[in-house]
Amino acid sequence: MLKGINKQVLEIHDTGSEYFEKALLFVNPEFAALGKESLREKFISAFSGAYVPATRQSRIKSALRGVLFMLLSAGAGVLVTLLLR
Image (cartoon, rainbow, N blue to C red; front, top):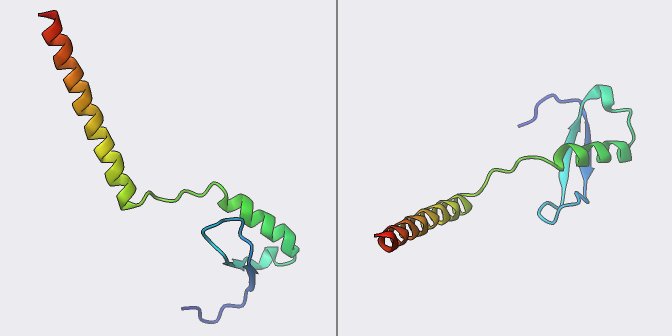
């Protein structure tokens, strides 16, 4: 909820992302004099490298891949041990 806020709000329709169609930015008063294009460029540069946490499903897939890799490695170790005997 926003109460008593007196700030410039910039609405960006083209975020440059296929996932997000619009962004609302609340501009700090000391930078309100900058032009819209300058603020848009600052937005893109600030959020282009933003960290997005992995989803639960991708973490599960990653864990399953790790388990599969360990099982294959153990199997290869057993095979080498049996061949050397």
